[in-house]
Length: 311
Ligand SMILES: C[S@@+](CC[C@H](N)C(=O)[O-])C[C@H]1O[C@@H](n2cnc3c(N)ncnc32)[C@H](O)[C@@H]1O
View 1 (cartoon, rainbow, N blue to C red):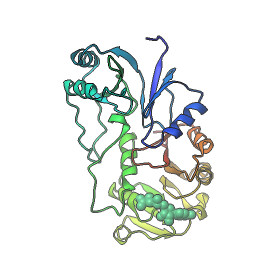
View 2 (cartoon, protein in one colour; view 1 turned 45 degrees about the horizontal axis):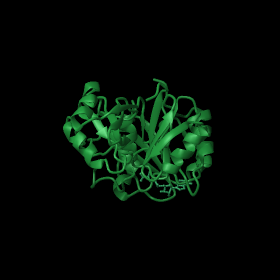
View 3 (cartoon, protein in one colour; view 1 turned 135 degrees about the vertical axis):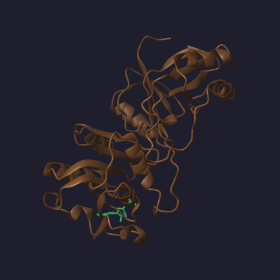
View 4 (cartoon, helix red, strand yellow; view 1 turned 60 degrees about the horizontal axis):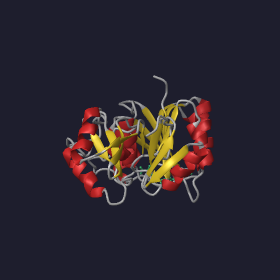
């Protein structure tokens, strides 16, 4: 249908407006929007508010269920149907094509296991006789959504899932003996993750840690404000993790101070938006060389910014 390269971006549920604004700010030409899918002209760009990016989408005829399935299988084995973009009235047809494709496991991931390595393509029923399919996608998970075998007994809340997902996607995670600073640590979900990896953790919050977390010999609790710490004299740390509720601008200032001090090597920080999304500050984070800004499956009106030290 076209020779122009295409790319497609899937918005996280409920954050379609954020992705639309980001695409506009990055001057991406949106050719069509269907549900959570934005089909754009041009090669794929890094997009913080995309839960998944379809890197090589193309239109394929789908003359029959069998025809559609065999066209997909001729490219590769593993495919995930993206439903929100299916043309109205085609869901049943899409389900039949999906059933004709090889089964792809959606089993929850056990933390510690690597993310799936087999290429996972994505497709949707663009018209009754045409599918939009991308054999390559940015995320190893269907629709970019990671599901874990949850631990419902040890962590004090579900915030730990953000770190589990980040450390599953990243090439590195804290290890035994590394020294972590956890800012905004209460009640202790992130601290629990870091300590369970064998790292020593300094957990800072005005509010206390849950007693079970505080008793861990690897954990030292410091009561007070994360912003009162002087990076020049408080480090060095291998990892700075920050989940403090604050304006992203304040977080940016704090991160810059820590970067300038050279006393934090790796960063994992949550940008929490209150009211309108602060796209300008998000862009300032994304522009920090070597860093990555992403929307994790468990992020709400938030983004996760990561900077890893050069190996
Ligand atoms: C979303 S919660 C953090 C959850 C935590 N990461 C976990 O896994 O359990 C945000 C925390 O930021 C803390 N906070 C807000 N302002 C702070 C500040 N100036 N200094 C330190 N902590 C702060 C709050 O007390 C709250 O515990």
